[in-house]
Image (cartoon, rainbow, N blue to C red; front, side):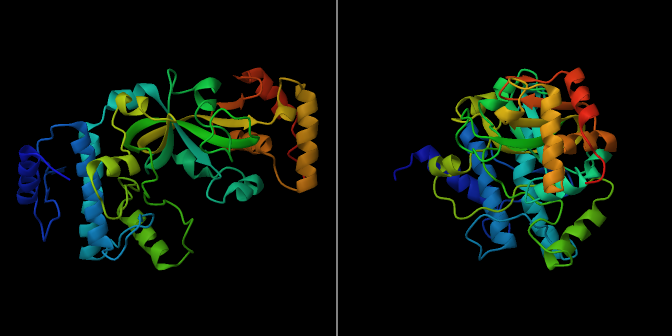
Length: 355
């Protein structure tokens, strides 16, 4: 591959200006910002971030050749604290160059509840109440471009984000249900790929395991600021074109416009508040398109008794009783949200008593 003289100068300059124990970029300790060169294009900004994610891999797990990072670094060790700074690097640069007005005003922010194997537990005990405390800890959310981000239209969601089991085939009628929190807050990272951000709860590690103990220590040390989520480490980078194709970082509307599927796979949100809790579903037999609310409620109550656990509609009713605000039901078959009166009418008919 041939490179121009200007590109060669930039490569040399970056290596000279950002050394620290090898080829790792130097961050400015104590001033709350991280060094970076003068970028000539947006792609250079993004690739610089990917390099910092690669640096984190080289510092935290030099023998790792695949993406990782859902666990927290060991904050009790100097090596863990140093690794944490490299992990912050890409996120700091993202926040400096991202179009925050776009993400605030034109992107809906949806956090799925009951995911990562938690659907059965949710249908037994309800939506976790930990979200009710608000946004002291960062969360991962899906981003969907919307003219009304605090309540995206069924069309905006259905064209990019079908109910479960249909990833990669937006707009196709595959039955499914999901419950999401629609949030408002500040986006601190966005990429159209799984960035392996830290897990706030124990999903992939057992309680009491080393990974869980590091998570608990991180929670203890971030009590005032809240638990952070930052992009993890990535494997060996190759060249700017293929790297950005594999790890597409999203900075603004222009980046979303060129996406085949307009769903931003992972964003991180801070200082968030819950605007509503929404059940999105595509099940024609439960739709107001062809059924009365009374008939739907009868079927749901029958299913609850048969399976000895709540349906998603019962879960939504339970969530409201627990304090979740503004319940919504998005009925894809009917092409609309149920009205508040229709939701109330259904809740009045749902049986929440003993099985």
